[in-house]
Image (cartoon, rainbow, N blue to C red; front, side, top):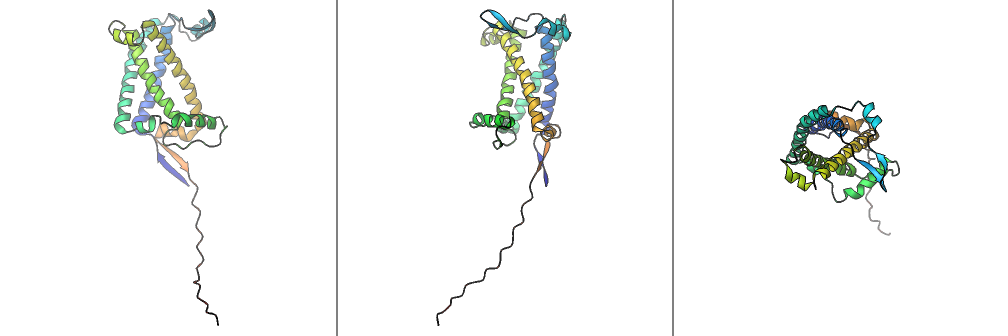
Length: 238
């Protein structure tokens, strides 16, 4: 027996699918800007152990000498990204969707159980409502990251006009480092998110497209009729 369950409202689906290409454009245009000055690398005892984007990476993706193009796209789509995020946050609070989204006290413990289940180490996952514990933490974290990207982005974009934001970020260079780190975080989230969608299967993906998912339920077992109970009569001793 199959049952249709409404899961995601239309607004949530629109915010999700609008945000995906916007964030992708922001990351792509950010790379065009970062090419002009890419100082970040992982160093051990003064020796570069890992550089995020080597020269062959820029040439392979045709990123070099496109700084002005990257700035034009980045500074245009950042307002759309911010507007979509702002409306999404307002909607979640007004509609009450935040109740399904924000982590609970038990979410931090149950998130590990969800990971173990996804790795097929644990047979069953903790009970959930709309989102499991790991999703609650991840989706709330993405919202916080979006706010962080907006604050650090404005600090880099207009450091004189938003000097108080630059101060809160710990300076211009710190704001740029945080902005870069958050971008790497988005890329990692993309990879993990797609893997989670693949693991969850078609039913979960259909929910974010159509708004509903189909769950199979076992039919209830028919109850056996009780045999009639014969009253016991008192037997008098003769």
